[in-house]
Image 1 (cartoon, rainbow, N blue to C red):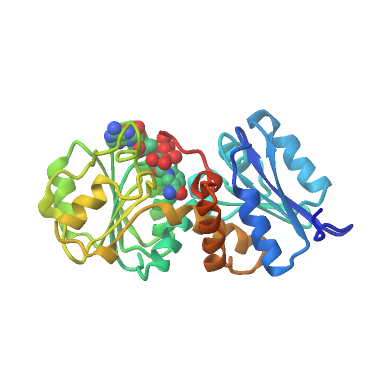
Image 2 (spheres, rainbow, N blue to C red):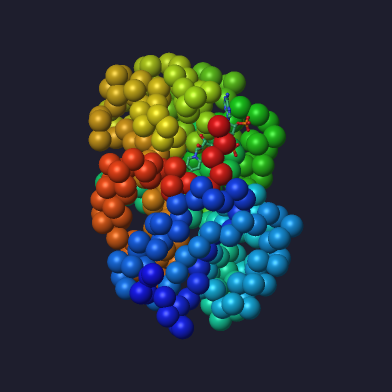
Length: 312
Ligand code: NAP
């Protein structure tokens, strides 16, 4: 029996479905334990039609907070008392903080990339960023990079529909005074894509191209001359750990320390949420060691940590 649980223990959790696979309880309970915080974290199966009831339960039970995963992120955003700037622009929430009955929705998915880059000694501040994709992950990354001080974001997407949605968000941000210069293009403009990457500081792939099993061995960047030694290449994909985009970058002039896979993104978006709940830094190093130990015991920590919907 867990000796941490008392009459004063604050409850936190994750809402979504399917949810049994979620490793969020392992990650957050490890952090509560580490700091000796009187909190406990559980996973709750919840679909969109149950969001309003779940939020009422959060207030009624005085839960400190909750993470939100698919398919509830947009519906939760529609039912918050207030939204962080990033959550407002993205229109989705993955972290709810309850301050005396006032529920504030945040999104830390994009923070996951920005903090992971920082963990690798890289910054997006004042940088020209090229972003591939305009889906859920890409939109969150685009908004966070723009809010956190990227100089420019050039977004490329396969389909017009996703691109139009991203453009609408970008236009709103620029109209609201966010200083990042944002441009939107179709991936079919291949020559422009390669030209922009050549001049970029950071290239982020936030599409599923490269992911195992369906898209493994594929990359949207087909001109090997675009890679240069100052380019930082970040791929949100973590299965495989080294994607074709990453191996192409490494083989064509990018420095090893500048080529980063998406493994840390899950951990760092969790760190963003943990800070919002507790005001404390996630014990990242200790958590990494704990997860490595679990991995050595045959438990897949990445699978465990899937806070968010992963499309294949
Ligand atoms: P999503 O909302 O479904 O978006 C998918 C994106 O990929 C869209 O921009 C889509 O373009 C693009 N795409 C898919 N197939 C493509 C193809 N054959 N050619 C060109 N573009 C293609 O999914 P998501 O949730 O954003 O996830 C995207 C990727 O990020 C997934 O691989 C997921 O595993 C990964 N991810 C990683 C983390 C992490 O923690 N490391 C977190 C979240 C997501 P269209 O608009 O044209 O369909």
